[in-house]
Image 1 (tube, chains in turn orange, yellow):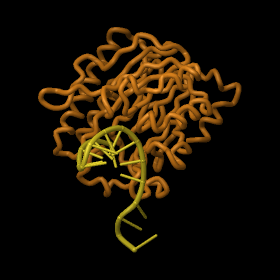
Image 2: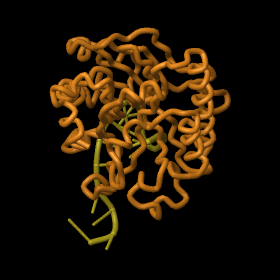
Image 3: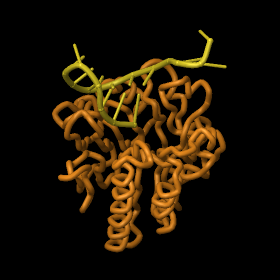
Image 4: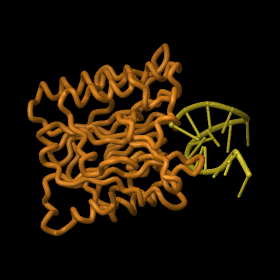
Length: 278
DNA sequence: ATGGTCGGTGGCCGA
């Protein structure tokens, strides 16, 4: 099974590219972030025409997450228990959706951007990650051995190698110790970054800002991840970041991140293809 | 040339 995660930065402006990529990459399950659409605006038909079932959670023009799958899509969860909203009173935001696809519990997650270290959005981000950690532990406790994948844009660069120049991030979000600690907590709990071993740094990123020619200058950040429970991580036979998809006009500022599970395609050589794009 | 972008929206905000 081929599982991918991709912050598409508006599904409506990107639908042709996303549909083409789904077919080209032979992806079975795609976790999408930043659809920037309400449910009634989401292009469901474009996915169903390609044989995918769709679960989308979008409240307005901001955020928005989805899972599309051609290997089943069951037990959809919109958000997770106690998911924080922003502000007082807390306004709900569409940043998490879960579904069981091909026997894997998949979450599509769009972690809040902290904006600046002293912005209220930073506390919101840390709180959001803490609650997600607590819920993830509860899911695993309720179902030991559960094959679970937390997929999405974490808006955290966990290691110095995950940005092009640490000096450029002095005093910035994404690399601060509290954010990195919040990310590390998932690994401390036993989740595994299943992409990094197949796409090691330095210089390997998932996101490049549109501004200041960051992509041609190879100045990106690794902030999109697939974190898997050990039982699932053991079944991962390949992974890649498809930076080709960041090229050209009409690209998202994030590249798709792909994970091959179970190795059913090893005999056909598809894994070589996936590794080449890393 | 020391800056260079997008998307959704509605006349700026968010990333």
